[in-house]
Amino acid sequence: MQGRPKGKGRFVIVRSRFNDTITERLLAGARACLREHHVARGRVDIVSVPGAWELPLAAQWAAVTGRYDAVIALGCVIRGDTPHFDFVAGEAARGLARVMLDTGVPVTFGLLTTETPEQALERAGGRSGNKGWDAAAAALELADLRHRLGE
Image (cartoon, rainbow, N blue to C red):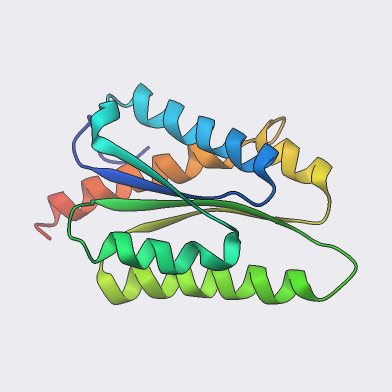
């Protein structure tokens, strides 16, 4: 990881409850990363929303408060038999990017977009690692960079 984040900053994790088995594992990974980097439990807020579609709005609400150095967005959309996946995954991703660019607050992307539940499990603590951990690590790095740049 670039930079030297050492527990500085305040973070919010916004987690989708849809595909809860997966998103709970992503949340566990994000929390473990923050703990390993000495972020005190009291410096991390966790909120949940019904699904990935709602992640951007909750991320925006959190970002505009000015309380957080970064927002960690966690969710899981698994392709099904309808085009629902394309709409939800694409718009959630676009919305999260928009929040980050509009507010200047880092929003990291821990939203899995997979073809199967098995692929999601692989990315939520399986052999492909834990993308919740990765999203938290990115949040730490971006928060550190933002402070070093004098933002």
